[in-house]
Length: 466
Image (cartoon, rainbow, N blue to C red; front, side):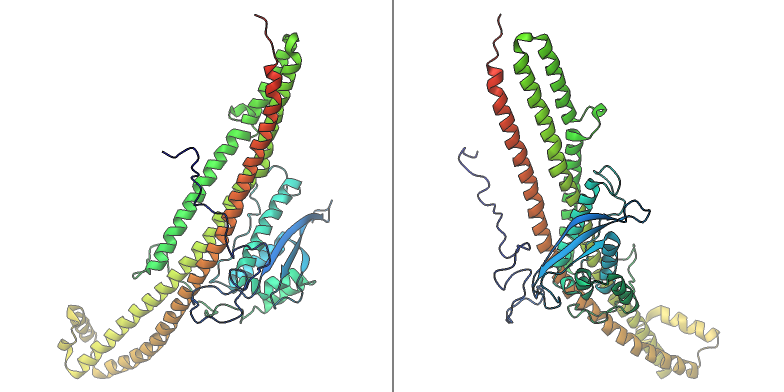
């Protein structure tokens, strides 16, 4: 058993050295800042930052109000020392469709990077009202703010020319059209080939020689997402039982405290001698009910939104792991195809040389020879012509296998870096999310203690004559 004075959280620290993305780095090490000198012992799989980029989304404004084309614009701003930016404090106003364009083209331009998802355009859970209500605009602003933060933490995406234009360009629509017409061909991609081949992976195909490193990563992603799903379900249930807005459900605790306050106030009218203390007690119950509702709106609802956002971010990370498997499968399938074509060429060479039995190709090759003989295709001239075509195909396949192998290796290295970046971002967001939850609960219990401390002496002064 633990002693009363033993702190079970002695080993827990909230300090995360060199991972604070909300302040300018004070040293030249850690996420958000690239080291100025080359370290020969540096891990090549570690991401490299060239500077910091701090972003914010604020001041939502309804544009073209009272028209059918009304929309909401947001002020996006940044503070940076990245050389790709022309100013250290760029800012501009953007609408949700601009964020959609930015995200879609970053996914296309950087297929090996974990590009976070945007909030669903029609997802209105936990929010009441239309898309121009203050509650919805604030929730959307917070999600867009988090989206840009994730881009800013990424050492490759933060240096994208499209992201720079998103913050700086005064002619954004012109830049969008130019980007569509002339997509970049030499963006910083950590040495990965720019054009990835179409994936061969389908729902029923698996990599035959899986890399243990990526199996462990996939297992960690599964556990992380499972924990988020459980947390979302748990806090969703807590929210429903605390303040679901439906008194008839019988599980709305705020409504129960409100009803109890009304009942106590009614009792005060019947007990004339203790009317004032009962009215004070009723007011305390009403205040506590309001505190619960306030905590739901300021702590629980943002927590649920953040959990859902982290889930979508993790899905984007999973997609990169799947892409790496696809590239490895491309290499395996092409290697098998090359092996089959080479075996066929060797079989024909053995037949022509009169040593068909020494090829070790078995009954299948023998049956194929017999079928060719029946079809009249067993003459040496046709075999030589076929061998010539097979030699050309083998040369083509050898080049394709080499390219696929280089692509697979490059994507594996990039994926290792992406997992490190995702881990940095995940840790920062989990710290922020759990910190906000703790602050909200502390605020609730402090206010509740003050309310009950004020009413307890009033209740104690009640004297009932027996």
